Image (cartoon, rainbow, N blue to C red; front, side, top):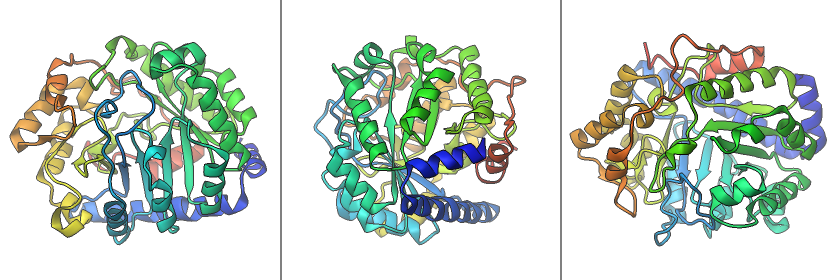
Amino acid sequence: MIIQMAKRTLSHTDLRLLWKFAVNFGLKGMLSVQRFKRRIKRGVWFPPFLYISITSACNLRCTGCWADVSAPPRHLGLDDLNRLIASAKRHGNSFFGILGGEPFMHPQLLDVLAAHPDCYFQVFTNGQFLTDDVAARLRALGNVTPLISIEGNEPVSDERRGRSNVFPHTMRGLETAVRHRLITGVATSVCQNNIADLLTEAWLDELIRRGVTYVWFYTYRPVGPQPAPELALTPEQVLRVRRFCVEMRKRKPIGIVDAYWDDQGHALCPAVTGISHHIGPGGDIEPCPIIQFAGVKITDNSGDIFKTIAEAKYLADFRKTVASATRGCVVLERPDLLRELVAKHGLRDTTARQTALSELAAMKPRTSQHNPSNEIPEEHWAYRFAKKHWFFGFGAYS
């Protein structure tokens, strides 16, 4: 399977882009995690991977979205972005996830990517803005992979995305990215109205046929101003997602990402392990994208992001307190505990709508990926090795 995947990737992807990926993401990413592991032995926590929502602007209105897409858009400025990335690079970071809103609606996104050729960027996008001109620029840059969100077939996409004709426009963007020989991924928030269509071998085979390099399945989380809890998966369906990923990794020549289980199948939260934190479009530093509360900003300490995160007491308390309560998602399982942390540290609501606390108060506890005694260990040696050494619990739950 590994040989098949390598052959297929080589046939669809620009070799220069594969080299950039191997060095900037692969080699540098591993070194960044090693530095992270050495730091935490000294009690210093600074994540090797940062996820940055560079804008709240979006052309869609998706159910369950936590971004302030209905409010006047906020953008992180070019100077702030460059300062942030440069500051993180000084401590070994080389990989950055770029989120929104829709990142391609940020007027200076391509300038940011171009300013840091020694880094690797994963841009989470709905694919609507992946024109030939944009894809050609991304290929010339070589240090970015578009991760295109597909949330269902045509009628489901229109329902979930709040617009008509979303699916064909997204598929056109996908085709454009692949035609320009980009390392192209597809992400799906698995929920009640797409699990039957997209968590299938047939869908994986279709993406393989189209030249997609990797897929990322994650479970729907009912948050934001329109949470739609009826779309949330049952515990049995969450296990189905995990089992599907483990099984398909052995059989399909396509990369399959999941970020919420370790090599032994134990649940984890990336924010609790400390491997990643999130920066919102207002520059606020949050535990993760769906926890929209913060106590510090990227402009604190004269822009020294390492010092700001490493000394943020609420992030340290979040990691410790949540790890003692669950290996799963605290937002889903213990919204009451999260409210206590917000009050304890006097955290501010980082949303433009200023309703994050009332949204949290209205949430009913539900299960997440934490399902003790039902762990499904990794079966493919490559995934098991990678997760064991570069994406496991880091002692957070010991």
